[in-house]
Length: 212
Image (tube, rainbow, N blue to C red; front, side, top):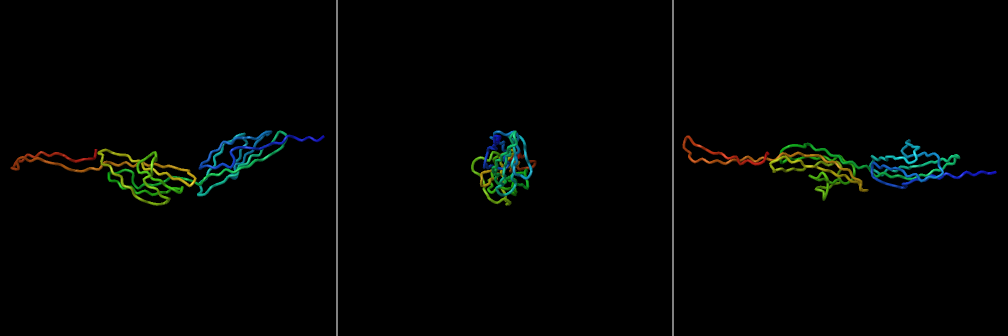
């Protein structure tokens, strides 16, 4: 008598998937006639025996990073099967910049140094949400430039300097820093002197503006 056990079949989703860093995937196990599972995530050592594991794929390089994910299943009879597929993580994006000053009186000239990774950098002088057209766009990841903030309102104003870094795959990262600008002050006064003879009474009126 020849006994042939039913084959095990390894299968999962997603397959050939790509996304931005970090890329978190909860795998959908489509295998059948399997009693045990061994996942290899292609990073040189991490594995799992869960039925449907969740894994975070990272890429801190300046290029696309592929991972080969494999699932090996074993049936109750010891039959095995393996399924493999690629997971791609797009190039690293990180918004980072320094300012030389973040609080002073108007007019305030701020020196800004870009320390980012990505490819394209959109700058917003006062938008925490980074909506609408950027005030300045560049592809220079290490440039230093200045922007002048003006406040003549008579009260303090907090401006939201925002950078959006983006790679060619549309992955983005955003960083916002607050710039506190005290209102400018204009000193002035007027006076009325009805009689210049000694002693002379003079009425002064302060016409200064700004300063809160």
